[in-house]
Image (cartoon, rainbow, N blue to C red; front, side, top):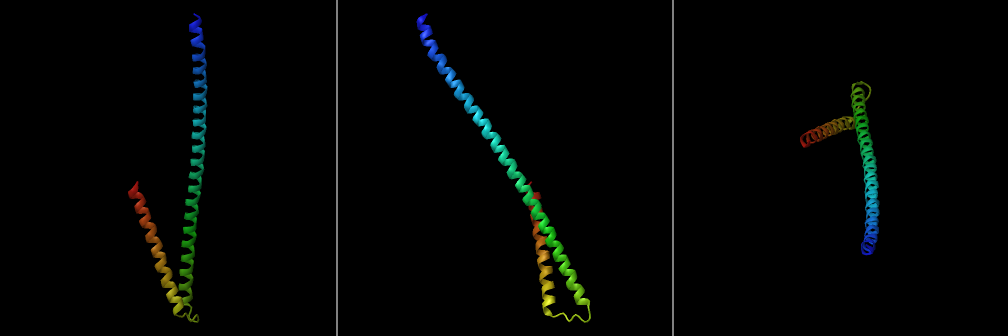
Length: 116
C-alpha cells in the first residue's frame, strides 16, 4: 500500500503539472488567435478605406478631365479667344489619357471578374 502511495503521489503531481502546462498553452494559443483575428480585421478595414480613397480619387480625376475638356472646347468656340496650337494639342493629350484610363479600368474590371 505504501508503495502505491509513494508511486501515485509523484505521478499525480506530474500529471497535474502537465495539465497546467497544457492549459497555459491552450490559453496562449487562443490569445494569439484573437490577436491574429484583430490584426486581420484592422488590415481588412485599412484595405477597404484604401479602395474607397482610390475610387474617390479616380472620380475626382474624371471630373477634372471632363471639366478641362469642356473648358477647352468652350474657349475654342469663342471667336476672340485666339487659341493657339497648345490648346489643341493639350485637348488631344487630355482625350488620349482619359481614354487610356478608361481602357485600363475596363481591363482591370474584366480581369477581376475572370479571376473570381
